Length: 299
Image 1: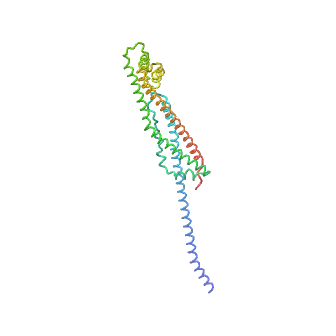
Image 2: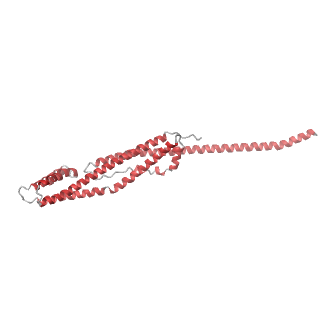
Image 3: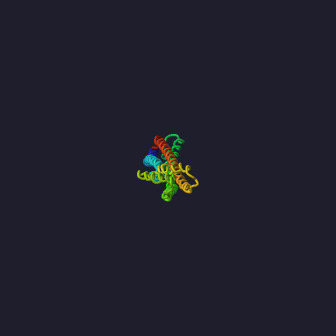
């Protein structure tokens, strides 16, 4: 009786425990498989994110390299315009802006995301990485400021230049009219008109023959200035001297304003070129510093 009871109890116990154990084991395995699946999914997502981060960093790096290249081209263009400021036959002193410096592609990037990639995900001191990132952003702002300011300058650049050239042409025309007005006067030993004939007619004709008529510096120094130097030697009571002085003053004012304009334009361009080179160096060094830092291990 006791044996049968024990067997019955064991049978009942096995009928309860085995299913419970099986259920527990099955649940444990299911949970383990689920957790393994979650881990694998997380690993896949992290790997995908790392690849996307690499692609974004490479895209940004390529754009920065392109910008650095075109900064060099832009500085070369600045040098060309600087040389033109010394060429008196060059009338257009506007600066051509490299369209590749407009940063269109760069500005489409989310810089918060970029900060995560270039600063938070990289090894190294956070302060140094942040400084490099800020330097990169500031360099890009400087390039945008350069483009904006140069476009504004180009829009108004020719106004003072054309005004001075207009005054110069008008004064030179008046000088020629002065000669035509008094050249028929048959005064004996008329040294004033002899000087005017020599400079305004013969010397200017020679300059034109040599193809230098548009070189205002040569025309001033070989035609106008010699008359200015000699004019004090003539009788101030001669009304022609007074009329001539008025013309010569206009000539000189126009010439000096053109000299000043070209000097200021050259000075401004040199300063701008140096700023752009400084921006290039900062952008280059900061980008290199960030590139040299390894990505933190996350998988």
